[in-house]
Image (cartoon, rainbow, N blue to C red; front, side, top):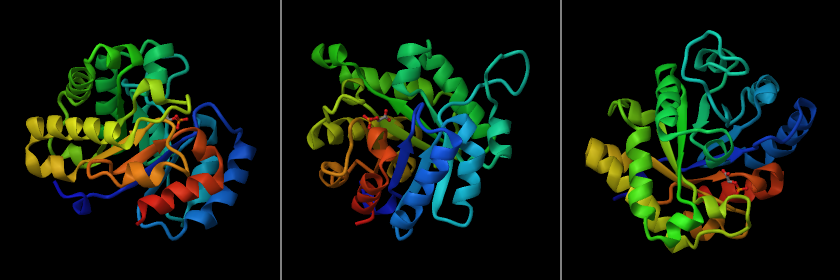
Length: 255
Ligand code: PGA
């Protein structure tokens, strides 16, 4: 499969970090450092930072995303945010299925699918996260698990909509732990994800789909991870909060 036909996407996942004022300062520091990127650059910020991020990134090469979206259009869903709300504030991307949502907030494969559909139907680009826990890796079920998560997340997603889907392989044991998957492990599972997309949608769609790696990707290891044929980008947590580190990762993806 040909990596050159796919767009590399580096997305920062700020998680629950940065107030609006702090977000503005980080974006001011980051924009000049990534302005020459030859890849897609996205920052997924807390809901309350979306407006300031969209305003700051206007006219730049950086796109703004949210970290979750509810699957209903409106109604009695206290504290939830709809896809239409995200669109209206200028959001272009949304993350679904992050392992922290699955682990701490009862997110299931089925709700990940519904959120993914809601995002796509509203015209958002969706970064769908999949990945195994350490126990699952040790049980030797990584391939089956990631394939299953990917299949359920993509249920009812059309081949056309796949142009707006990015799949992020994020081994749970590597997230925020400083324990990165080896480039070989990242490649192996990103290739499995692409095989699943191929099985569901055919070779052409699979070749065009961006598959990211996430989990302690940083300025020091990005080059090696992004050098792998099926690793088309990264979903970056901790390192996306430091402008120079994020810029180094963006530069690695621009090669
Ligand atoms: P990390 O987070 O880079 O801090 O490990 C990645 C993620 O959770 O998307």
